[in-house]
Image 1 (tube, rainbow, N blue to C red):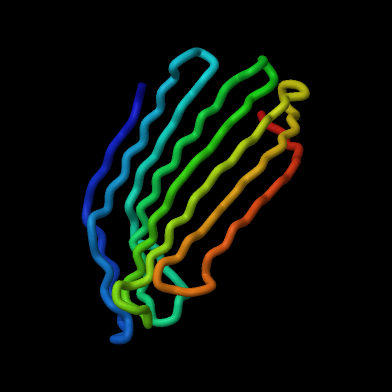
Image 2 (cartoon, rainbow, N blue to C red; image 1 turned 90 degrees about the horizontal axis):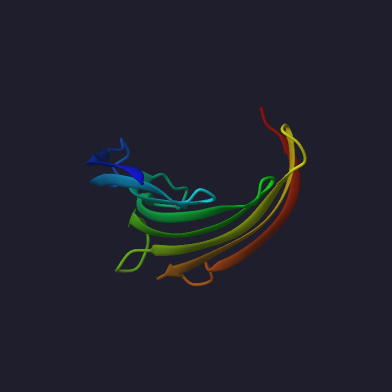
Length: 153
């Protein structure tokens, strides 16, 4: 098992008096665990300031948790599952009290088949869902399917 952690303080100050200063804890950690020689589990947790185009809002504090499980089914077949959750807390703006907050959910499945040492094909499915508090008609669900090919050295 391996990992790292970081912690600090972040602040974004804007010249415009219409935009609030955003500040808060900046942190993150990652962990990687290999329970068997064929399976790897990795996770990441972070809290950062993000910019937005949302009218009147300075930005938001994003807290994100991601986990990925990768398994080598065969020497040339790798399967993976990805899950995640993000909570976005908007600062400022024309939102009701309490301000806008988004919850984003992620689920992904993928398979990679290596044709040889240099070429591979892959297929993936990704589901994203956003649920917004205090703002009507802003929720959505997205389903993405794709196949591709690539090369590696």
